[in-house]
Length: 167
Image 1: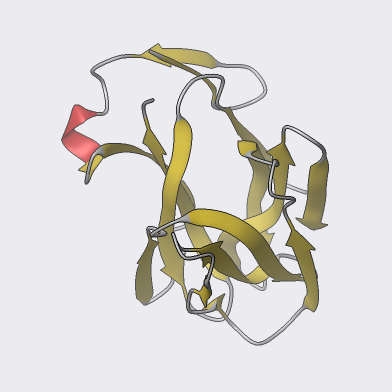
Image 2: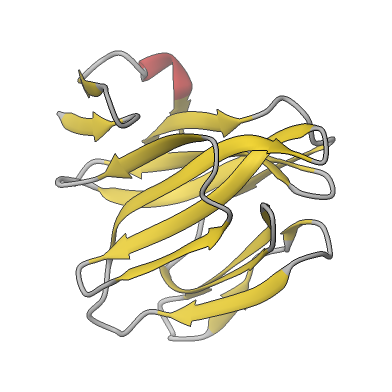
């Protein structure tokens, strides 16, 4: 069972609720954000995520993931989003694991988009990147792991979902 903090005021416990949103062997949680963005994306790493690059200004413009495969070779995802914003890259230590994600959804340039994202590991918090205005969401994971991410993008990161894997 996962215990999810979906907003600042709701705690939601589920066991079978999201079975219809199964993504591979995982459960998709989300999306957060708007319905815009003509480019759907899904990123499921074939190894451990070791780096994330976010470009942000008034909102999250784009995100890119890097993972290491079993042979310790780095692979980059596509860049999901537009060309704007200032880039921020953070690299995880070998013993550092992602244990939570939070962010905000708001209106930017007339579109409902992801306005900020933060990533929590067992070592530290990275972010927030973007502007923390709008409706907040938070997804701490005490049991299980992050198995991937998905969403939609155009010029900005319009929506964001998480794929969770049980242990």
